[in-house]
Length: 54
Image 1 (cartoon, rainbow, N blue to C red):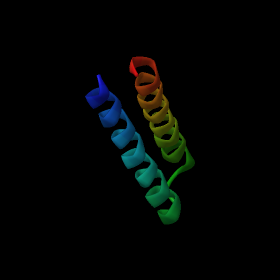
Image 2: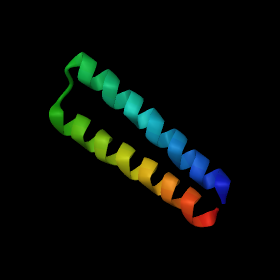
Image 3: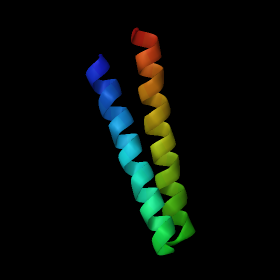
């Protein structure tokens, strides 16, 4: 199950990069908030799966 955890963590980091880019470009706050929530959920799910399965 480590593969899925790795994918979740990578997707979360990718979304965090998008958040950084959108904040730097001055995009709408709703889009930044939505991406931030998605990134946090992916990172937490990936870390919890790593912790649970190991």
